[in-house]
Image 1 (spheres, one colour):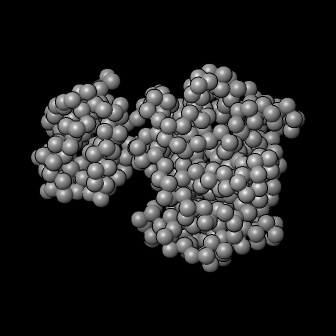
Image 2: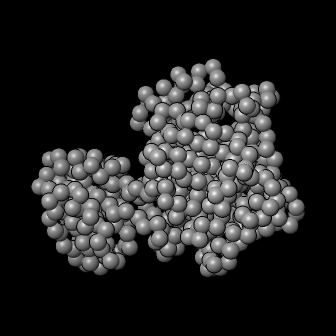
Image 3: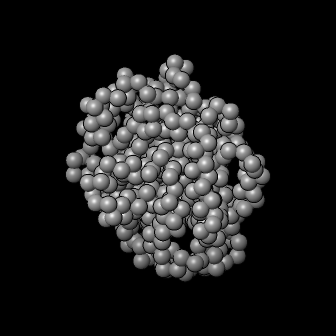
Length: 432
């Protein structure tokens, strides 16, 4: 790659990567496993993954599912590092230098596209009020970083499940590559295990294609506010990226900034996706308050706004439709043993319903669970003594503006699709 092209990419906070993928004889359907932070309460899912991947090359042997994170000992972490070293030594992995990968992911009949890039950690901050070009979109829980550092700090490779969003309404970065995917070299084409759908990967390594990527990103960058230049917003895997950032900052202290800037750990391999991809589904994550009476909740709600009104609705569908009718007000749904209720706030202290509810949760987090699916939330909330909170959808059009205005959302505000639709581990990259 020409040096001026590298500099243009660097000015957009990214780089091409020496991407590692398995050699041709490896069964990719067993190689690829879902992100480690999925199915955390379903140990049987990961037991089945272990059975499927027994005695064959797989990313499962190089990651630690979060359901096992609390039980991780030095022996298991050492085994992960050794597997990475063995795969490198035995030629299981083949390198594709100075490249990107166009990813086509199909699930439930819908295909979305992403681009594997190396993201510059110099441009990233997970501080809530960050104004960095790369930033978190949900609150980062600092206590979740140290156990993840234990796993990454000795590993020779990184395997990303991180998804990062760009706001590209003109569809100028990824979509032109997708439109001519048939002319690109296919790197993998496989079904994904346990209901994950299908995935294909295409090599992007010509200066011509990379120049088009650089030009499109330069155009997006030029449109940003220099004082608050949000270019890349976290979609999934923020704590993994925060872990990479923390270790990079450690490296600066240990080796000096000059050496750290040249080190491969300065970058993290991620998949960027256009927030305007129609197959990219944003789903709100709802809340259930247990052993909390409605009057108690309403008393706490009065601390969050100047006033509120509550209107009954006949069904969950009617309630959800009402959530999308507001024009700038703060509203959410409440489900209790008496039925469905629309809550509309006046003079709310926060711009998002999720932020209002989070301030109430923070008074006693132990009484709350975070629930995927409005129907499950309604069922749990309707039980005696419980309350279900149905949150409105987050607008794709307003997503970046909301982060610019309010900073990171409260934790577990949204999810990109269901668990099976999350990123699967495929590509790898050397980090030391």
